[in-house]
Image (cartoon, rainbow, N blue to C red):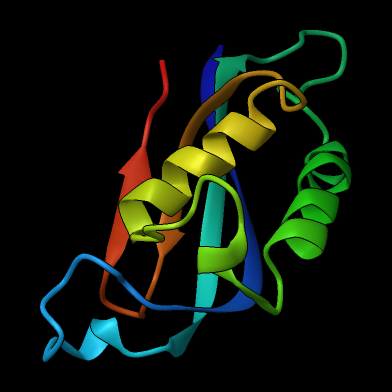
Length: 121
């Protein structure tokens, strides 16, 4: 049986977008309460009855998000000098793909009504 599994994480960060016009609201420093969905896809292990343990996903993802993104200025992080939601989703993919088997998508919710999904296949 093939399934898609999603685990949600949250962190707080500030940023500004350096390439928008100076009068654009995102040119100014501001913060977001980011919500990130880490999605895995694959075949359910017949013996275990799951794709992976949700706890194993948390153990691999949470330390990276907490230590590298939480309560940081995203512009100061190498690779996030222009920290749009699109770039942030791709950056998270690059950090997680080596340590999260079956990774299929990263969705970054910048606000309650705006999100971006990156699939790094």
